[in-house]
Image 1 (cartoon, helix red, strand yellow):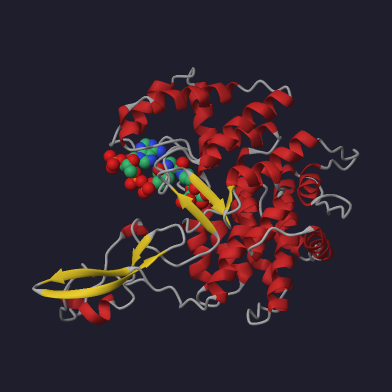
Image 2: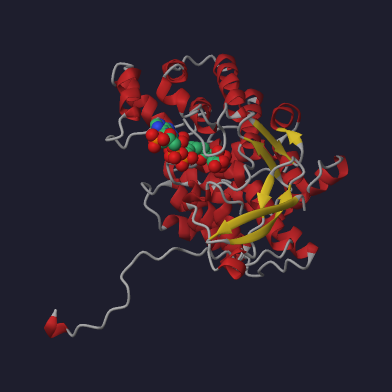
Length: 427
Ligand code: SDX
């Protein structure tokens, strides 16, 4: 504990401990606020409220820093692969060769999904949004893996983690193949984790699957960049769902639903739709900038702004560079990329955006790469969920292992004061 903070109200002084994190962040510990003052805090959207102490991911929004378990995102994106990063986030250390091999072998052993699950998938119309399908399938997994996680048993916890790491890519692939009317494929144990995901997504029934290293490396890096982001909306949803001791799979399903929102993970799909609308509108970026700044217009510049980053989102910088490289390597000329760059340039010089410190976030350029990889726009947020899976697992596991209490915020009531009942014939 660092020292104390004093609150003074109506002539009374109340002291609260100040806690300091390993990166010198300071927080007032208000666990005893209501019992000592009778008051609570009010903070819609929790913009100033820490929900937990966590050792998984560190962000510095002012400096544009992002680290998973102490490793800078720039190094992990360049030097690690997605499965290594998943292991790091969940278990806290980069795996050695044996650990990584065993992790992957254990995952391969669990990569079958019960054929009955296909009946649930069949029940959806082709027009169903893939995020709704994925959330439902993830929740349905519990029916085929009934043993809920006994978190006091490390073996049981490990087995649950392996099961979802193994089955989730299959569900992601099935979700896309359902929409495209393709037969539901299974993985190939001879392939890498991300290569296997790509094969399950794209293999054509009547064609050999041919690996494209550029595509697999780009997908692997995008998944790493989406793998965790401390207490964002969907991760907080996973945590608060799990805090009631609901199971891991259903907590993840809740997180997928929260991620779907266009203010959160759904933004990557909304960015592409916005850029396509601008292209269809003759590339008139200024018109959309004016809409974004008009308080009477609900339109926002999708892919811009962030609750924490008041500087460049470090992931956006990496993805912007990767977009140039991947499209160049694949020989793709996408006018949408030029529109995106033009929009970014105009926004970064506009006082409205500069004053509010609104920079491109992770969602601004990611869709351009997904599109170049042949991923349909409606699947962009599913790819975000695939990347965020290990982060959600790590955060759920940390919350349960730390024995965090059930999440139950208070409120300030602003409704009617007590009043007598009025019989129907008198209303
Ligand atoms: C993700 O939290 C995470 O870590 C999330 C994430 C992760 O990895 O999990 O990083 C992933 O969700 C990235 C964000 C994707 N969403 C979008 O790109 C949607 C567009 N952005 C916004 O809606 C907004 O910036 C949020 C939701 C991201 C953040 O909103 P905040 O922190 O609640 O900020 P705010 O809405 O209070 O905005 C502050 C001001 C307001 O103007 P004023 O009232 O001060 O005049 O900035 C304006 C807002 O109107 N503003 C925007 C804007 N974003 C904020 N104006 C136009 N376009 C925008 N995009």
